[in-house]
Length: 504
Image (cartoon, rainbow, N blue to C red; front, side, top):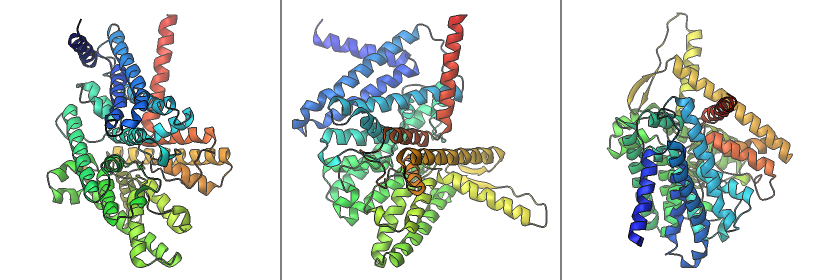
């Protein structure tokens, strides 16, 4: 058999596995394919050829394992097994993220760039778009800098959204909903996935060209655009965006962060230049209000408490508000030098987060907006002399929606769970690190909201227990809590059923 025939046979096997395989095998195939992408930069940095094995080995193992799982599982799985419900869809989603995080850490370990726990921490920061790091960025090879940014870029899209371009039917709907994508942009899920993919990559090209035009190297431009659009924050510079000392680059970064933290349905309106519809969306109006209000408050604090000039205070405040609200985590200043008042406002912004259905973390602007509307209506109703019932409405990209009992219940449930996770994570870090509550709250809020700004608590001296708490927080924040809990419960139920079948 010649080389051409061998290659055709391998490609046919992969194609057959993708078309007929179960979701677990497809996840392994996808992640295996993504793991090999960083080697594309080797022709530009040939001295890093020695690192090719760090990516080729896990990629090949993942692809071969994916093919084996697809072909083996097909023989005994009922066709409807993964087409039942959101609960069933959450387990593949949880598997995809945990498997991706593990595989993303392997190149760091093979190359001996990082010990395993640090590599796992770096990978978790990458895929969950958090961006906190304990690696030495200044001495890290280019291929690993690219790997970090590329993980964030793919993590912003989500594993299931990428897989949805390969599958269809009820299975795709369950997976789309389970990964936390609230909006269907097109008539079917596959078209929606492709539309989001095109929008996302279009902005990648747009942002990279802008950075290059204003003086950033092509490599840095690509890495920073991937990180900014995914609202992640990994950088190729020790001093982050502040290293460039460029107002134009900061403006471009603000623009890309805002794009990344905007709902994909709104971004579709933006590509169609439907600006009136965009400004009618309740979440977008609330985002503008929050940015203006917090920029004003933080600027006042910097001007009067730190004696900054008006121009410098507003400049630093605006960039910091956008980078924290969008949960990106880029920095141009040292926040340890800021006053407690300004830092407290940043913590509030962390927890608000970006738009629902975007790459940003946090509670999400829409939920905070709904909470304020619901609370205001409730107070107004109690103070009103009449028993008049007000029908609450809000605008999404798709049009007007009612704030009904289901919306109220979902919003309050999420915020309650969110608060419990914040309290639990803060107390655990306080216990393991023997630090103050304020330091622990800032650090855990930063990872849980996927902002990634550290107050110095997370470093190479941090205990393994604290790193694990932070990694769990990142995963909970990226998958919005409930999917993780539902996925774990579904997995336990599945194990119990298997044991019951074996006994029976």
